[in-house]
Length: 473
Image (cartoon, rainbow, N blue to C red):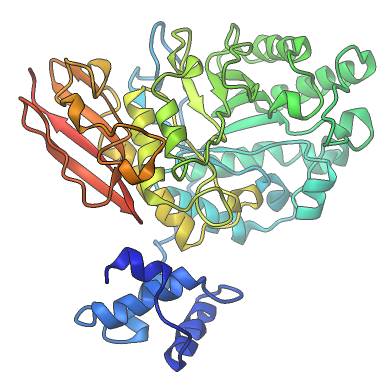
């Protein structure tokens, strides 16, 4: 019997489980734990009793110590970020590379407008403790979806909306957070009716009255916020919210935004088509794309596809990964190995990460499952230097530290999978650093001529992923 088997099988319900469930609810969770969660605690009590002598100790990590909440200080001041020619990074005012780590915070402006500062403090304190230094809220969320969630906002609220923009951004700044302002999270407030989300039709192009309202709104929004530490995004997934597939309207709004705030970074939006580079053009300063979520192999196939990706590999401007991986509870995957692999691969591809989780649509503080994903997500960034020099190479190339015999005969047949799905890394004067994805649990990765050092191995269930390092050739 091993841990992986026990997670899926475990044993039937017993009296001790009642105390586990009580602890679950005492920690503020609703309902009951999943069977796998119960089995995880049962395993601790049965097989790791030297470390976990009671239900209380086995469930202690459900009650993490809250980090000391930082006191917002009005004197905190973030310098505007910039880009440099032929560079994939963002820079501070002293020309140092900035390790930008963004989190979804789509509906947070509603919390601010409603005066729920305690919730915002809790989330901002959490972000600060977890190395997040930028947030992405959406504005003009005026559809049924956001109203039903209790997180709608609209410029039609008048002074309530406009008068709180600067205080909100400055409050985020006091926690060390840049704010990437998505100006158009929806278009309902401008077109005057709910969109049919089944059709996702173009309700903006050619509609002069609506376009004029949008430009007037942009004038006021950017004019109000352009002196603050902000980045601008014109629209969230434009083709999904009524702007059409290839939207000249978005390009015009971007030109307008850049003319109003030439010293602030701006991107158009995500085309949500992995092969589309339509919004990768001037005057945008960086490119954002919501890459496809490929569920095969617990979303590690999505990580593999980053190796050869037109949007990432373009040389025109920095690339940020938007909502391409929904991690944690209620998301696509709660695998820490996938979270770890995603940022490690982004790092070696010199792309900028953004953490996306379902709970952050409403801006709830992540639960332990989502937090574990964020911790692994950060670890992938921490262990690979942001400016590690070298050229990208696939693991099976002759110039890599690995022999092609370590790769399985087929990536389609999991039963015959005897090695990593792929290894990709950077090789140069400083040596080699790479990410090996979807190895079988317990796999022993070996190199050929150069000795291989495992920097970190992250295991989840039957699979694992790791960062490896080798010296110069």
